[in-house]
Picture 1 (cartoon, rainbow, N blue to C red):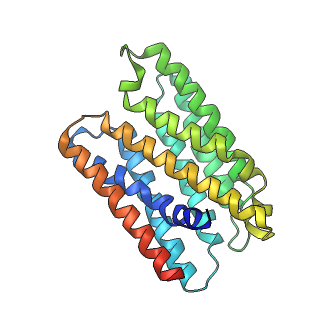
Picture 2: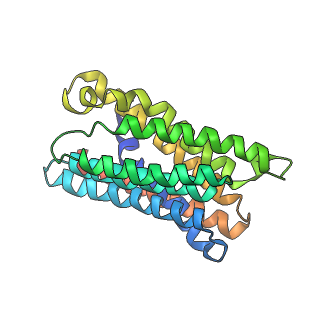
Length: 236
């Protein structure tokens, strides 16, 4: 079990590389929401790699997590903004991107876990529920599971709903060093990996093809190899 959790630690953010390669292949089909998602995936991978570079240098990594929280809430709210149909909803999402982004900057601390993670999670959960409502209201597709946005929204809802209570008690998890914290963080990284799987399914539904499948699987193979190598370096 411990080995699996450590592999999930290494795989978590890096597994977004599958979605990055898929969107890179589909660059001609890019729309504003897809460009924002691509930026979000890149931020996930960069933060993941950066975190372990700093970690192996025996330096604190909390400042990277807190910096990523700023980028995350802005990019997810911008995705909601570009995806929404109603003008009023667009204004709300744009305002949240600015206000929560600014709040995350104000609350930023390099040596402590930011308290804004659970607040951002609540905003993202509410936003995804609203966009699901709009999808049901405006979609002309008979089967919603064939639409990319369905999978993107499901991925966000799965991760942030599952991680909400972990974020709510993040000081206990990251700071106290109690044994349950290891397994709770393992569960969060499990959700993170599941989220990236759903993101890849969403990318697949943009324009299914055998070539796209190779890009997605190639990204996951690279991420898995990275996780195994990191584990071997750390514990080998």
